[in-house]
Each structure stands twice: as structure tokens, then as C-alpha cells.
Image 1 (tube, rainbow, N blue to C red):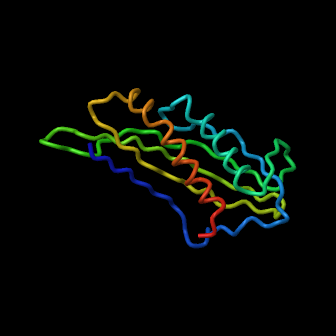
Image 2: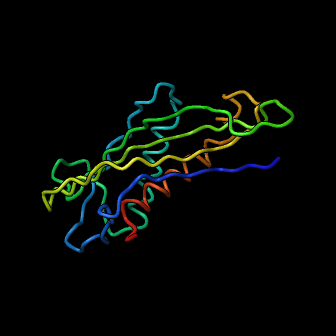
Length: 158
């Protein structure tokens, strides 16, 4: 089976992220909320936890639940939908589960809030599988890919 995963990050050149200044020590990572029409109840809590682990593990920032955090990250799942992505012999052969997450960084210490950024990624699966089966098989990959893309968008100097 051939699989293609597409990715789209919406941003403008003015949204280039600087490296984390040394003066920034703490980050509050709010629980990711589900705002999509269809939701997977496991996605938001697992994505939140994985994002927290990655930020604390790969930056000098300390996680806090305090409202006095230097930076605060807020995110919501805005898209969780299925569409046809492949047709073979006049029949659907591949479906795509699209996951979109909108992320906002509030730079409290600098008294600045970045514009929200929407990160969207497609995950293909065989159309003979039910959505529930595909979700079970794809959930770990979804969590990893979306966490990496959110992290890169927030903390990479690109």
C-alpha cells in the first residue's frame, strides 16, 4: 500500500520565530481543547502531554501552571475530518484524516501575543478500514507529527 501524508503550515514571513531568550524561564502549556466538529477523545490530552514533555525536555524552559509564566501556549484542535485522497479503478482507495491545530504563543514577559498559527497535517489510510480502525492505527503517528510541527513552529528560527 502506498501512503502519502501531506502537511501544510499557514504562516507569513513576519511570523518568523526568534530563539528563546535566556530571560525566558517558564512556560505554561494549557490543555489543548477540541473545537473540531468530530473529535477523538484521546487526541487532545495525549497531544497536550506529549507537547509538554517535548518542550521541557528540549528547551531550557520549566513547565508551570502559574498565571505568571513568562510564556503561555494555548492551542485547540480546529479540524479533524476525513476526505477521499485516492481513487483506483473508479473506486475510493485511500482516505485522508486531516488534523488541524491552532496555536497561540503569549509572550507575557515581553507583553506581546503572537498571531495564531494553524498547523494542518493529513494522514492517509486504506479506504477499506473504518475510521475507528484507522484512528487506532494512526494515533501515535498523529501525536508525534503534530507535536513536532507545533514545537518547530514555536521554537525554530525559520
